[in-house]
View (cartoon, rainbow over the protein chains, first blue to last red):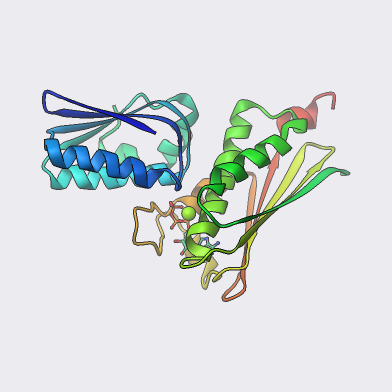
Length: 100
Length: 147
Ligand SMILES: Nc1ncnc2c1ncn2[C@@H]1O[C@H](COP(=O)(O)OP(=O)(O)OP(=O)(O)O)[C@@H](O)[C@H]1O
Ligand SMILES: [Mg+2]
């Protein structure tokens, strides 16, 4: 699921395991609660330990982009593993300039 | 082409069954000696179709989702995901990338993912009766190997 840390104005959400429609609402709730508390200038989504993801994960990223923009912060997506490259490319998320 | 194995699986449209369904199909395909990438493609496409049945076909209730799969001796797999839910009024529009009728955080990319991860995708649907999505894929090693 997700481990969340806050340090120096940055919320880092380290995702792990499988991201699908069943689990996404819980991840979304945890990340949004932390961001509302901390009002970070940056939200980092770390995909390094994610083994599986479908389009529910893309919806999760797009939703966090909207949420953090409303709070006045920036989104960064890091450590996308090779097995998820295909779905990230298809999603067009690169055009949002969030992929690091 | 000879069918070498078949299976049928039915389950209730609870979101917890999304991971069960994609893992079950992946396990069924193992005799085709799939590559890691091929297995990932099938799991993702099956997850999309099953999630659509859970989310869209039975919006306010639970219903049955049925998966039927077949393998041939030439390394070809056919996987059908069927629901008896609300159906799709305009299939062409539904399959357009970014099209969604959902108000949650849905990307509208499920069909686009199925089409890019599988060799062939067919959708049949009748409003009020339900939807069947047929996914097909050729598995390289089973087709050209010693199997
Ligand atoms: N089994 C189904 N029964 C009824 N309607 C469906 C079914 N599958 C898809 N649809 C309709 O087709 C639309 C597009 O489906 P698609 O999977 O491409 O996107 P989505 O499910 O809305 O979003 P995402 O898959 O990215 O989370 C859905 O919004 C829904 O209106
Ligand atoms: Mg979908």
